[in-house]
Amino acid sequence: MIPRVAIVVLIAAMLSACVSFPDAPPASGAPRLEQDAVVSVDGARLGLTSWVASEPKAAIVAVHGMNDYAAAFTYAGPYWSARGISVYAYDQRGFGRSPAFGRWAGGDTLRQDLRAVIAAVHASAPTIPVYVVGHSMGCAVILTAMRDAPLDVDGVILGAPGVWGGASMPIFYRATLNLAASFAPGKTLTGERAGRQASDNIEFLRAMYEDPLIIKETRLDAILGVERIMGEAYDASDDVAGDMLMLIGEKDEIIPSKILRRVAERLPETAEVISLPESWHMVFADLEREKPLSAVIAWIERDLAANDK
Image (cartoon, rainbow, N blue to C red):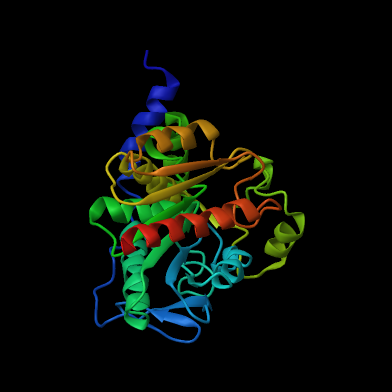
């Protein structure tokens, strides 16, 4: 007799092909920055929050995590810009102020938008280096984009990367999710039963809960989409190259620490990994955010100095 789990896995594998997401929309023009938006290559307007340094020596493209938006960098943006690095935090498609709120746009579209934002920042500030900083799922978008082709950036910073999916996640979880998303893609979950804490900054968490631009109820097909891209990011971590910094919060309850350490070992030898004993998943917003925020500045400044030689 075939074990019940094996049957579930087999059915889920067959159904997973039925759950698909749209291809990236065709490009129709050059991306550009506006006051409160980035216009992507297909003309879609993505929400944008900028903190522009008075005399910028570099720029950061900031990429938020799942169900979040540019407000994830509420503390980081002013901190980094006050130290000479302009920050451009955009809302990924399907999140915040961007189109199709609450719907999963597909990995190809998210990666296309990332490249568009980077190109728009280069066009607006052509004389300074550009870095990309990701948080959680934002790191998954970055890593999978790097897998496809190098990003036009001088360095990559991964903050609490979302890499728990695919082969890094138990097969029964994946099978169950595939089944659920196949039969009820529009059903939503709140995540309250998970009982996991994202940060020790309770004031920040309360603000997120009250913010209408934060997604509180997540569609099952969107959960499947983020699981897939995080699994792809885990796989990509063994293939990417370039100057990289990875920040790990030792108190992270969202991404298992063993997965984060495994990814740190898979990154290229040139990657620097910093473990933060008092940081949680929201490394750029936790009460102990000073250390990771300053670590990003120090790493960029070392990179700038090395490239000046």
